[in-house]
Image (tube, rainbow, N blue to C red; front, side):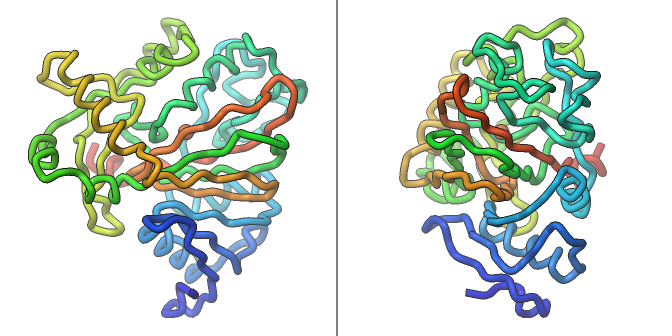
Length: 304
Ligand SMILES: [Fe+2]
């Protein structure tokens, strides 16, 4: 199937899952792309929520330039114990590149108890990137530079499809509810990363509706994540129970696509209508070097 033909662009699209996800070929992101190609990728994302673009030979400059076509970029926070000021070190020069690797700045594999390794364990919980920010994210783009021989799949699901499948009584119950999200809630749940006071202050909680309309498709999407700690105005335990029930429903295997990484894959997901999680691998034995760029939701910026 070819999409983008009405824009004069010949992108080849292969569906990855019955409900969402597309493998996209016919574009080389190591060169500047024209406006029609840029729009065709946006159309694909609005429909499929997740795009996999294989065999992309990108360096950090390319990745940042491509991501910046779609909006302002988040800056990676410094993680306690990581060398280099604010994430800028010997391996990574751009503040807009999130280091999703098990390496230190000299390229050595981190010890299991290294603070960065502990912090990243929280990524194994189902989440949506940056839901803990009031100005949350649209797309994340993750590019694979080095992958381990086994494991480390990224699992993803489309929360529009999940919302569609919810019982109507649940849809009625959750309409209008607002959840509070905090990065420190998810970090405490898995890994036990303890933030410094400065870190805690730099990333305060955020509040978002449980149900949001995805602008590109017009479909309603469930917006929950491991960062969601409780429902505003509800007793903590009741809210937490509802969030757990929703996450359990959403993460049924029928909704999930597991991406097996190949070097050169660029995977883009729309955080407004997906959840994802990392899966384990032998992280003290094999190198995994993936790099992420994340786009800030301009609509939320405009509303603030
Ligand atoms: Fe993530």
